[in-house]
Image 1 (tube, protein in one colour):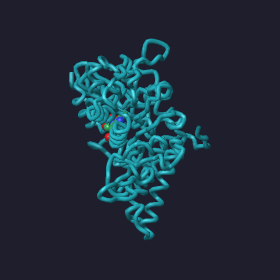
Image 2 (image 1 turned 45 degrees about the horizontal axis):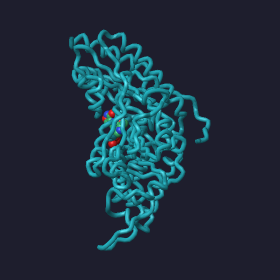
Image 3 (image 1 turned 90 degrees about the horizontal axis):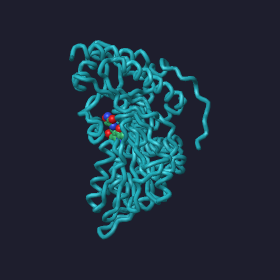
Length: 416
Ligand code: 7TS
């Protein structure tokens, strides 16, 4: 387990002051940014770190003997170590940089497919997955003649385990891989991944966690979870777009074949045969997003400066306030009422299309996401074409929630 350091008390105004974008006006109104599940905003420190790389040490990494290349390499590798510590991985080389969760999942599905999947084997996912944790496995299953199986979702938006007492009857003797989201991007449900992983381990099933919506909101400890692979995007955790991570347990990564070929991932290349570089470089073909990775390291250092539990508590209070206030609107239904949730709230309103509501909220300066949120099977389960979704970050306030509720009430009057 990680050791806790003493952190300053949570002060939302002090946090807000660090996000330059929060001073922007949208349609003449102060920006209320409630689309953090799509991408979070970035504190000044992250923006500065990224531009300082370009302004002072721009060079390619792990290549040159010259000073700038050495400095760029050191800055990139410092980011890797920061992330290792944050997620409590055993080794820095277990942290692979990717362009985001989507790339991490494609890497995982391609490589694990090659390593593990044979005809009639099974990959188990859940009914609340983002398309990035569905389609790569479908492609892998097609390639290897394997089957995709799905853990159903209950009406409250939780995983439906087997019959009783958390007995998991979705696992069969053909299940090779369990790929599951830590937190649902549409419902906010926090899944009991640690328990699922323990069950999977008893059956020698490899576990892959989609942590895209967890990394900025929960205390993620990969050793405590016991997962084999853990994927997330940097840009949802106050870091730059185009950055992400795939954490992998060393012993498994050693056995997994590369996903992409090219420069940096090789040891020796001949036309007859190529041998691969050691970890993590075997999985990092080509020039990485160096500036972004440096910014990502800074985002994690920034998060480390705060008490994540206090951030989570603040976001949860916003969720509770939003739930209570939104439910006073006639005909409004919340989609996803699981007991354990992060600050994500999805809702539908009788007689109001989510797209129209999103447009009217935008005119009030309020940014929410509308639509299926890249979870079409989940929308089908709930019998809706889409929802309006507000997703909170540590810089959001109770007053902003009030503004959203008032604007929603006004919009409903106009639209009905
Ligand atoms: N997995 C989950 C659970 C996600 O929420 C997302 C993005 C992804 C994977 C893909 O991440 P990317 O960084 O590679 O795009 N989710 C959302 C969302 O909810 N709204 O916009 C993107």
